[in-house]
Each structure stands twice: as structure tokens, then as C-alpha cells.
Amino acid sequence: MLKLVFSAAILFVAFVGCSKYESERPQSLEGTQVQFGESECPGGDDEDPLPSLRGTVTDTLSQDSLAGVCVKLTTEGNSLVAETGTDTNGHYYFNQVANGNYKLVFSKTGYITKSIPVTVSSSPLTVDVELRPTP
Image (cartoon, rainbow, N blue to C red; front, side):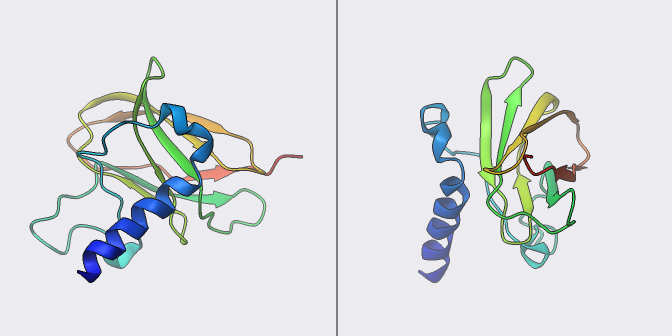
């Protein structure tokens, strides 16, 4: 029961920072999981797959981790595949991403939005990003 409540809280927190994208939000989150913190990162449990795509978002100036960053995974044509938010340590995760070319779009109020092309293959991909505060 505690795990179910915690999972619901995680999904709520993950989307709070993305509320301005309400109309773009997918109708289903099937196949998308959000994991938080290194100790919860899949890999220690044989049943959990290693995330296809993961990383940490930090502030360019202070190097502090940024919580609540909206991270969108889109096709090269800008169709939304999945979205999540960074946790309190600035970590984000996307599981079960099909091989292919995508864009990661990072946005947070007070920071310049950043878009990065990525290629997902059979090996897990780590993309760490620094966001610059708006002037």
C-alpha cells in the first residue's frame, strides 16, 4: 500500500513542473516509469531493467542539482513520446525507450530551455545537462 501511495506521489511531483504542457501531455503513461535517486536506480533488482535514458540536470552557474525540471522526450519531428520531471537530486529517467533518434527538451521557469538530440540504442544512455538561468 505504501509503495502504491509513494508511486502516485512520484507521478504527481513529476508532472507539477510540466503543467504548462497540459495540452501536450500523453493520455497514457504506459511504458514510462519514473525512478528517483541513485539508491532506487534499477540495476540492483534483476526484475528491473536499466533505464534506457537517464541523466542529471544542474545549474550552469552554481553547479547545484535542479529539481522540478520538465524533461520531454520527443521524436525528431517534435511529437511527444514521454515526459517526466527531475527529482530533488536533479535526476531523470526514461525506461523502455525504443531504439531511434530523439530530442530531449529541458525546461524550468527561470532557466533557458535546452534541446539536445540523442540516439537511443541497446546500451543505456546517460545525458547530463546544465541549464543556464535566464538573464
